Image 1 (cartoon, rainbow, N blue to C red):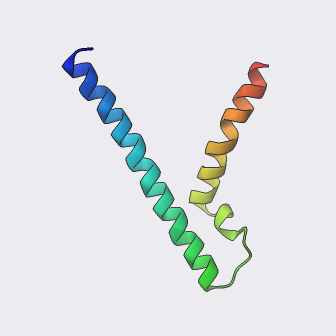
Image 2 (image 1 turned 180 degrees about the horizontal axis):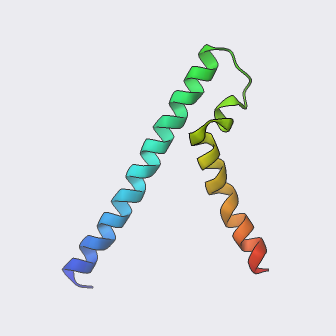
Length: 68
């Protein structure tokens, strides 16, 4: 593998990890906000970061089912 290919692959990995960290922190902020306001447990999951996380969990299953 050439050095340029390695650099591109490393940038891809770092960008995915950075995106996951940002999304995780955003979700935790929504979770803390909901707990402070004593909202129902499912409220953070209905926020934008919660819906993105749920979609990320459900989409591979839907894809797998579509291929069957």
